[in-house]
Length: 478
Image (cartoon, rainbow, N blue to C red; front, top):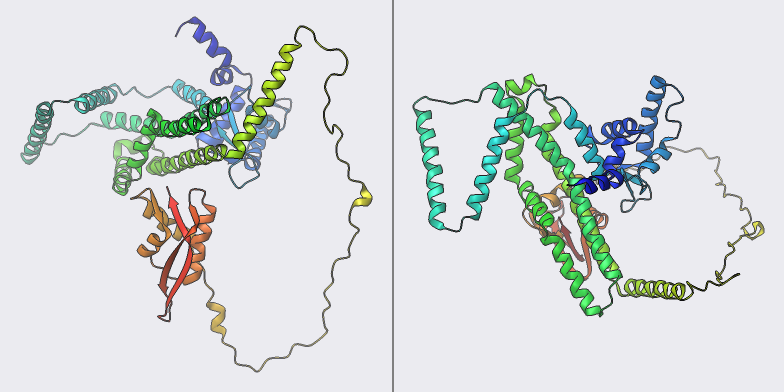
C-alpha cells in the first residue's frame, strides 16, 4: 500500500467518496436506518422513497427547509448512479418495479463508522484464543503424518479426560463476567459482519460472471473452443475460493442438526446474567435465519447468473453479438482510415430518424359500455331442500405449508422430484393440492418442469377411492 495506491483509492473507491461527500451524514444515516438496523436487503423503490421522504422531512424540521432540497427519488437515483456506486438499482425477476440494495462499498463505509464507536473494552483474550484455535486447525488440517495426527488427538483426549476427572472431583471452572461479555461482543460483531459479507459475496459472483461474458464477447476462435472455455469458466466459478467457501458455509448452515444447535446456543447465551446486563439485541437470537435468507438470495443470484449465462450462449444471441461486434469493428476500421482525412459535410445517415406518429382519427371510436338489464321481479322463497354443507366444503390449500415440505426435502439433497415429495408427504387435499405444487414450481425460477417426461402420482380421496394423475416431471432445486 504505497502513496499512488492510496491516491487511487481516494479518487476512485466509492466508499472513500461516500465518506468525504458533503451529504455523507444524510446518506449513511438513512442507509443505516433503512438497511443495517432492520437487517434488510433489497427494498422496492416505492417503499424506500416513502422512508427517505420521512427521513428528509425530519431533517428539514430540525435543520431548516433549505437543507436537502431534492426529492427522495432524485437522491436514490443519484446514489445508485455509476459515478456514486453507493446503492445497487436492479429489477428482480417477475417484477417491473426497481429495487435498491446497499453496495459492498457502502457496507465498508458503514462498517468503518461503526469501528469509530467507542467500545466498552477490547476483547484481547478471546481474539488471541481465536487466533490460536485457527492456527491449530490449519496445522492439524495440513498435517500429512498419520502418527502426528494421532498424537494430537491423544493429547486432546488426555485434556478432556483430565477435565472430566476434575469435574467429578467437584472442581468446576467457570468463566467470569468479563470473559463472558468479551466473548459475547465478539460473537455479535462476527455474526453481523458475516451478514454484511453476503453483499460482497454476491458482488464477487457477479464480477466472475462479467469476466466470462467479456471473454465470450471478444472471442475470436471456433464455437467448440468457446463452449469448452465457457463451461470451464462455469466450473471455475463453482471451484473458486469464493465458491468453495460459500458452498461449505451453506452446507454447514443447512444442516438441521446445526440449525437446532445454533438456536439452542444463542438462546442460552442471551439468557446469561452477564449478557443480560449488556442489554443484548434480541434479533441476535435469530441471526442464523437472517443468514439463511441472505444465503438464499445469494443462491438465487448464482442460479440467475447461470441461467443468464446459458441464455447468453444461445446460438442466435451468440451470432447476434458477433454480428454487432463485426459492425463495431467495421466502424472502427473506417474511422481509423479517415482519421487523418476527415470528411466534410454530411457523411452519415440514420435510417428512420423521425418518430412514428399515430393520428387521433386512427384511434377506435368510443363504444358505450354494456348495461345489464335488471328485471323487477320479487324473489320468492324456494321450497327445495338444498344442502348447506356444500358451502363449507370449499378447499383451501396452504401454499406456505407445501413450500415448507419442499424446503425440508431439499435439506438432505441438492434436488428433489415432486413425486418424491408427495411420497414423503401424501396428498391430503387431492387434485387441488397437486395443482398448488405445480403453481409453486412455475413461480420458482430454480424449479424445472420437464414437458418431455411424464410421471404418475397417486393418492386416495376422502371416500377411499384411489386416484392417479399424469403430469410433467417437476424437479425442485436448492
